[in-house]
Image 1 (cartoon, rainbow, N blue to C red):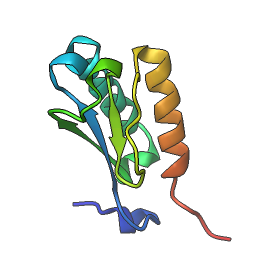
Image 2 (image 1 turned 90 degrees about the vertical axis):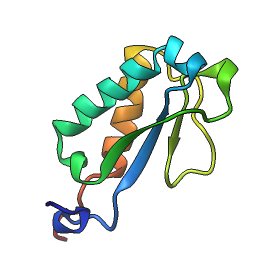
Image 3 (image 1 turned 90 degrees about the horizontal axis):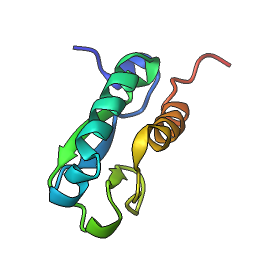
Image 4 (image 1 turned 120 degrees about the vertical axis):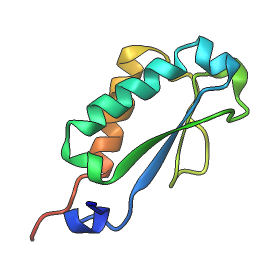
Length: 100
């Protein structure tokens, strides 16, 4: 098994994608699939893990995403363009640091 530390990362970040009834109807399932696919194809896969959760309590503004290190919930992550923007931000934040 490969660990985040083996790739220059301190820890793995969890990305929780809501799959509750409201978020699921608004694209939560597709959002989780996109993120898993994109993350799995880049070096950030060693520092990120997409998890599904039942409810993040922001139903009117979903689909919603909570990132482990952040204090709030990202609401309204609707459509592929928003998903790609989130992925780009997560990917950049979790890139392994290479020598100085």
